[in-house]
Image (cartoon, rainbow, N blue to C red; front, side):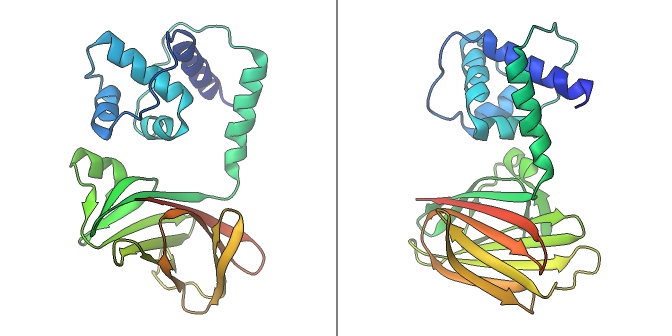
Length: 236
């Protein structure tokens, strides 16, 4: 692990150590997190509440970590050795199967994009999630398309709001450079550790129809290896 990453762990620990309460169980909204990242929160109590929440909430920490510029000039504190080793092992384990995450909410006929680690197709424009938030774009009329590159492979996830209660999910996998669909793939839909559907595709895409809100994982594999994992969390 680099010295820079170790300093990051120490800085997060220092912020947590100086917290005064367990923080609210409510997640800060997108606007509050954006203001936190940009340093626009002036009230000390609100600032400390968000800092403490981030220290215990993986979801909000991921959002902030994707955009914040860390200041490594602050004074360091002594971090327990066990905590430092645990953090190192978690960070090093990130070299495994790459993951695309998509978090949505059903809002009648609309789909609200809560968060994603991919880029979103808006019309003909491919827009990073951070820019969507800065433009206050989160509601989509009938469908959301999210894309992410996994090396030379590009996966597209299309979620269609079918009838307020059911969704259609299409997974398309193409070569990043040529945009040609990749064949001979196994694409599997999993919920709660149980395989729901699995298809071998020669066309590069698979449709999963009539999916209800919930937490799902989609695994993309070739003959020998798992290539990518997609986490889909749809709330009502």
